[in-house]
Image (cartoon, rainbow, N blue to C red; front, side, top):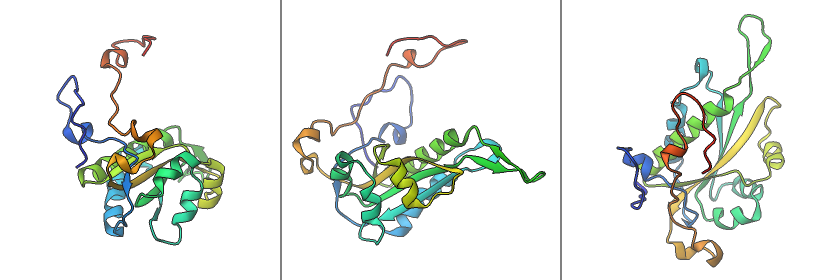
Length: 201
């Protein structure tokens, strides 16, 4: 399991949640397909509205024919560190559902919410197994969409960069100082009873 020892929750938060964080320093090692599919299988068990399960996971592993293509869609900053990772998983979701009664398409308002839940489960499963995951949105979404050959009714949300964590000294100096678990805003600035309160965070 990855660890983030300096985090201090206000309540009894599960260690697997607290210890998940998003490093950028990775060892350039391969990942076994069985291990990667085990992480994705955890995402499969996320809840979704009406059990529609709108999520899809499109992946490439290091030293396979798709690896450079998946890397090429990342912005330069992210590619610089992600090229040492073991896998990249693009997280996409279907935005419509076809009615079983009428055969007509209907929008799925919760497709992004449900798919985010699936993504979190993947990250927790990988962290529990001793792998690190860094979710990113810093890639060319149009290029990724075209490269993944997504149908019109699918949306690409993010990418999960997965690998074995390396020492921070493996990173360029300009991002080395950022290689540590981040903290969170106080709960009282995020959770409100009865009605929303516009508290500055």
